Length: 286
Image (cartoon, rainbow, N blue to C red):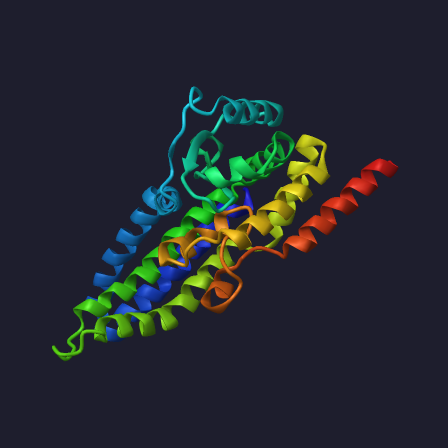
């Protein structure tokens, strides 16, 4: 069995255990029954809506072949070469250059590109990025990512409970301050879930698989360098729904400071580029 479905199941099981133990500690057997209902609800939300959370966070929409024929051609050629089903294609109206894949498996997969990415890269670099995302689909990294995004979104959404807590009527900034304090507690937990689900090795594996599919490691190295520079110029806003989905993208889309650093599940771009260049030198010597 592929290890990524096991990792996804382990993440869900770990969260279920925490919820059930919390229910038992708070209300005994009655709490366990209530916790079981919560676990079923969380599992259903993650399994059925985890794929769409990142797409919604990025305001992505389906893009047809008539609108973006060059993108469809590149994806179709690479999917055929990789012997994978043609994924659905989405476009995010975002200046930040990035791309990510979603789906529980190859037959339900989708690939999203931002408008900033399509403006920034040439076709050679775009092919390398698409090959990288197809590698994530083939390895079922997208399944674990969907679970991690769903769980992290649920955890960070708990900060909204701040508005329900009793506060002094004259303290207008009370809910906002309390929400921020709750995020300081829950944010690291959400980041831990993301790191447990993502893992930096998967990016190295997808980089190498993309280089083998295109036969051009330097194209991906060039794309990563330009995406990294573009992300510094046009970073994504540090909204909580985006923080939960940022690990799915090919490169870290956030400023490398503050709470954003906790959610950075990507290996350093310089290390990825170094490995790709070393792979190119190795192939040239063979």
